[in-house]
Length: 412
Image 1 (cartoon, rainbow, N blue to C red):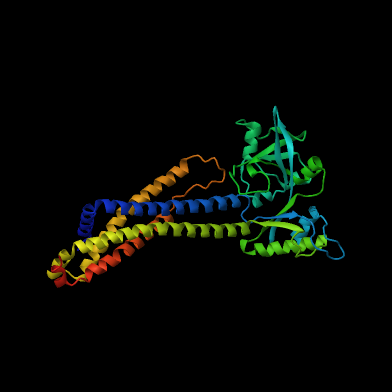
Image 2 (cartoon, rainbow, N blue to C red; image 1 turned 120 degrees about the vertical axis):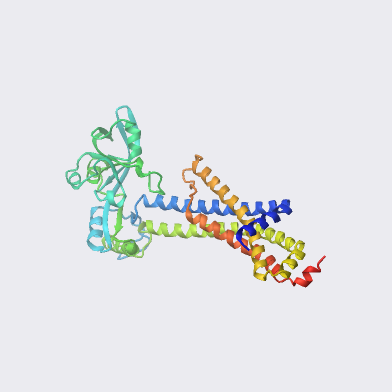
């Protein structure tokens, strides 16, 4: 029996059981729609959080000073740890897994340009911040070593900071006043967009200045806000973290296992945790979708069992004139597949439409994930469709194939 004939008989069976077939196909359609939409949103969630984290830094480790939680070496617990450039030098000298260790200074300052005045997150950074923090320059240049050495009053504007201060006007080469001190704009960073960060403002809204200039003119303090570390490879990130903790423990006389002395945030740890969370979420959503589809599959099975019972004499006649059990099996499997294919195809189209709407409807939530149309989503939907077709069609098809032709011909 060819596929054309199988499809024809499947459609004929649908017409004979219109209401039941439509209701069953609705179940299949809704189930496949749920598979497509939930899988698309799961991928979107993973991409949103993953990209948001890597925009901060792909291999970034943030080290914040804390206070000692244990007595050590004759020192009492509760001492504040405060970072200086000596800490950066100690990490660079004694941590072989660390590629970059750079100081970071942060304050909010009133920044003026003409009549525009805003409180803007201002960061004192080193030239390596361009690599460690994934900054790309749209215009001009980034801060260099000569700027650090000479404590130049230069600054690089994030895309949003530039928009706030200059709007559509050219900013390169212009001057702004930070805390009443004039700074020349030497660069404008490319927009990064939304970031998964709780460490202050997004990079687009910041102003970057040489950290030596920030210490001398803006904060008047030698202390750092934090130290940013980048390991050579992702595989040695945990080793680099341990090396940093040990180096700073030796310098500040606290126990290396004192968790309160340092607050360390490893971006790779968050990415691993994110992967586990999204995997668990996808499994949960997949189970919900499959359960929904199983209900539809039971409906298809019911239709096919009714069809077998109603067409017993027809099956007997076909077997009597030479049809093999395999032909009968394929016929009823094909008819179940036709029902699932029509309902599933409608579900895929409906799911695509819902994902398209989700991508184009503005969201009031900053961190609401945008669903993704991915080939893996359709492969998953097709795999589920095939599984449901086999599940719903196998039992009725095997029952039909096993009918004895003599008994079937005498069936009333």
